[in-house]
Length: 353
Image 1: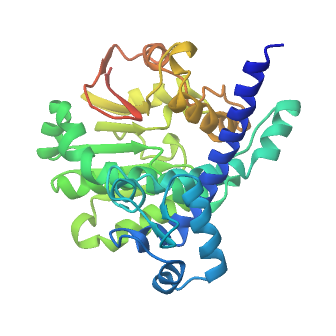
Image 2: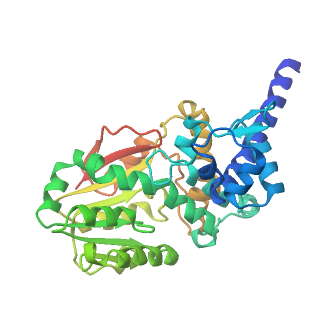
């Protein structure tokens, strides 16, 4: 046995465990507003953080220590102060931006909570249905995506699909498949007042949230935006759309070829499908990095298992570009184009019949 390699791996084990616990503590910082309280205020004592946050001092003290140990906060032992660096606040205390990472901590917490059930599925098969994930996971999904959808979808991403833009400007229609709480459809409806929009999702709580968000903007989107609970079969028979979006969900489908076939049938002549998928490579050896490890974790604890729970193939988060294109062509699409959009976490495609 190589003792040096053993020592290095033992260190890695503790580094990884520290990272897991640090992610949990970061969730607490997001959920309690502690990062927001500390942002832009420089060095603070424990009492100052406690007073500003209105939280319990003993919990605040332990959290500050943990976040300093994990490298999230700067600690000055001479002054006994803690500071959230500006560069860290940019990611941790910037909700609503396209660079906010707070939602990731919610998602990790929600994913790991079903760990015992995933372990059972290893032995017995099946998986964990989407409906069984805790509220923290749903909150995390929205927090992860909201800023990007609000700031990038209309002004940047969609601009690489001029046919779709032209159709929506002139009074077309759009469908968002797997719409969640409706951020995509809401942004499109705000931007294109001459068109109509539909979001569809099988998850009841998500649809309820989407409908509530639309209701709050009745003056802007009222009468042009509808959210439907169910599969594509629940839509108005024969209705077609100039733009269909499938954002971070194709790899989740329980019946991918069948669902993509139905999506193709719903595209109007000349219509476009926008597909957004996780940014992974086709080969495992090219995914052996921190981003790949994160995506494989999300796959095991959510994406793959919820598909298998429905009797699906469990494509998983790390499906990759080649498999994505193969799925589209198997479903009958003839045009598949990667869009040149910069992102650390996503790949973008325009697909046509």
